[in-house]
Image: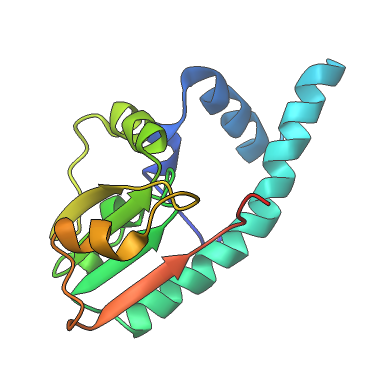
Length: 153
């Protein structure tokens, strides 16, 4: 995990989660069982997420496009931490509640991407195409698509 740094990620965490993340980064294992479980979950999540994030970031850098669509964007911070997106419009697609939560967390942080456009859509119940196009997505433009993580079954 040494070569990866996400200066925005910690800012997106609520205070209680920041404490856990800081303990994991400092390799301070809590003594209470419940706290150890939370610590271990964060530590192990990092073991899988960091290599995946590094790989996806490299792919985005290698295939930079004027449009980037991030499906299930959640707390994805690429538009705020990747200077390579300065010339791109990033469409962050997610459920409206997830987007509202992210906007609360992101506060006044300034994105590095040229533009960030939240696209509220429930992918389980709505078609993506019309909603994305109404947000300004150009079907004819070269686009980088990111669909990271897992989806509910």
